[in-house]
Length: 505
Image (cartoon, rainbow, N blue to C red; front, side, top):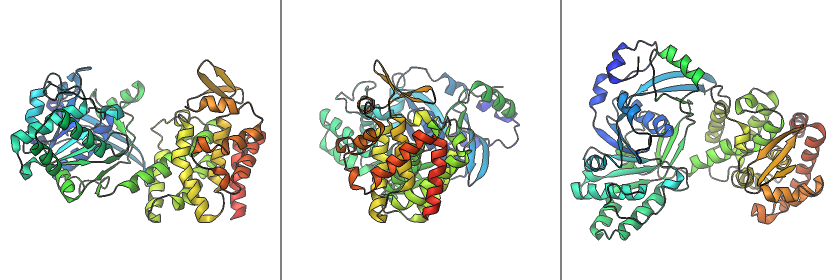
């Protein structure tokens, strides 16, 4: 049996959350650019949950920017798909299966453009959501009279201009435009491009005034791991449990956050906050970026070299190893929480750190450490060094776990071999590929002896855009850790650092 509206009544899987008939009659209140698993596993998840609780009462019309791949899977299943939530929340295992009815239909921009414009002019429409990847939010000077325009910002401008013509200047025309692309100030960057395109298209000044008054462009931060469709073996097991086939089934972790920068009007247009604590609308969402970048991304970065050089390939396995698990917990709780370079309540930071521990320990998500080392140098610079500096400024000493993570980074980046444009490290007789824009730099530094190598990299102000030698004792502690890693091996060196920290308390 295949999942569709017609087969819902025949599905008898215990505990499965199914949509009720009346949800299919809700109006389309969201126009969504993108069909990807992140949108279906986060914004659409919240919309579906709100609908089931009688709070949002609207569905999502989805736009595919190209006809590549078509819409057959969505058409065959009436937009229905299963979200399988698996992982750990508050230290407890979570297993939940939900058939989402958030999506009403999926349209193709080059075939259904007139229909998309018709939706744009409807009073019921409250929200536009986009996830067109970082490349999608780019200025392409083009006419919005094309059917459709090529770039996403031009498509959006065409949609908004049609709405202006259809509804004019009244409150029914208000829209929240929420960008979820992974770039800084995503909503404001999109707004700037749309305004430039309005000028390029010589649109009337009254439209620009309307745009600024009625269209609320919002920065947003999305945070949920949504791996998508499971592998063949896991899919067969799931379908056996559920009792039906689903071509659109996706996996998702329990943790979810959609932080949206907006005021009371945006909150009212969105209408989702009461449905789930993971939806947050605030005038400033910088705190959520800082918590994620410092605690989740920063601890990922600092642990990646340690775990990989210890022979641990996935994040979950590292959390099942006592030494690496203790390192992650102590790193976050003892060093990062109190040194986040932003005004953040300690209790909120601790609570977020605990969610990170749950997420890292999720046994259903295979997150490879070698992938986390991609662009290792840039990640250290952006995610870690501000915390290192802030910790030193506050405490007048070097944070031991950050220093050890930095030493592991240097050991990982000690390049042993160059093959064409590829660079490789080596540990215990096995090679690993180093994927980093600074690989050529590290290859050059690797020709030095180990002591000179460590000193040269730490002292390189051009590389780090700061002078790390001004952090008194940092070079010496990193060098000591680096030598311990070389002489004792990563696992023994990690145990030694944990003991030394305990003694120093």
